[in-house]
Amino acid sequence: MEKNMYHNLMMKNQTIFTKLVFEKLTEENLSIGQPKILEYLSSHDGAIQKEIAEACNIEPATLTSLLSRMEKMGLIRRKNMNEDKRYTCVNLTNLGRCEGKNVIKALEETEKIALKGFTKNEKEDFINYLEKVNKNLLKVKEENN
Image (cartoon, rainbow, N blue to C red; front, side, top):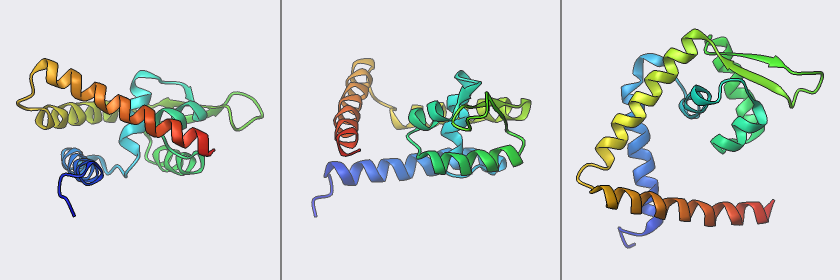
């Protein structure tokens, strides 16, 4: 097996990146999936669950479970906009806003470590390449749904 295959590197990078982020968030007791929700809600407070699921690439049923735990932890509040449960607004509590700031700080610090030694142009190129890969993968995902 060639060690520098794309899939191997991406899986290793994701595993290491996530581990480093969670090491910075040890006191928050967050589970996988919750940091990206907090990050999203930090700039989209009051979003509906469908928007959160799409933005965070989380299946709706999984999101519902994550949000239930986050509500019990006092990080968020949910409110139905009407009788339709698909239109449930999610708002951060004061604790959730504080935890969101901690998440963003941990993500930014870890990203800085990951991109250490990159020039500004290399960072821009790298991000553009990843966006292109994501676009290719999302296109296939959408075609399969």
